[in-house]
Length: 111
Length: 113
Image (cartoon, rainbow over all chains, first blue to last red; front, side, top):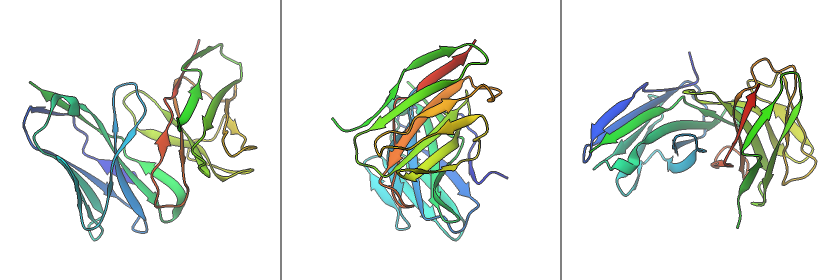
C-alpha cells in the first residue's frame, strides 16, 4: 500500500461544477499536509496548506481528518483554468524532514 | 527575484555518460530536495539535504549522487549506473522541518539517447 493515495481520476467536469478530491495517508504521525497544483510539463506549485480546522481560499476549501487519516480538496464553481493535476502532500512524522507525494488526480474542466 | 533555478531546461546525453543537473536557490532555505517524475506518475524522492554538508538518501537513490557544499546549491549527478535515467527532474527547497512547504524549480528534462 502506498503511503499517500489519491483518487485515481481523471475527473472531467463542466464549468461551474463543484468537484472534490480525497487523499488518504498511512502514517498516523504525519505532521503537516498540503495540496499542490501541477500544470502539464511544469513544476508543482503550492495551492494551499491543510489545517485540522479546515481552511478556505476563495473557491477552494481544504479539510483534514486526522482520525480517519484523510485530507480533501473542494473546488467550487470550476473554471477552465482549474484544469491541472492536483497533488496531495504529507510531511514528517516518522519520515522526518521528508515529504511524501501522492500520484495526483487530474482534473479537466470543459466549457 | 528570489527563487529556485535549475539548468539546463532540456538535457540530452548518451547512454553510459554521467551528467550533472544544477539547482540553485537564493531563498536562504536550509533544506533542499531532488525528485524524479516519470510520465503520468507522481514525484519520487531521490536525495534530500536538511543542512549544508549533510544529505540523506530518498526512496530511489541508486544510480544518483549529490553534494551540498554550499547552502544555495544542491547539484545532482545522474551516473551511468542509473538504469532508466530519462525523466523529469525537479529540485525543491524549504525552510526545513516538517511544517513548511517546499518550493520547486522549473525542472530539467533529461533524455538518454
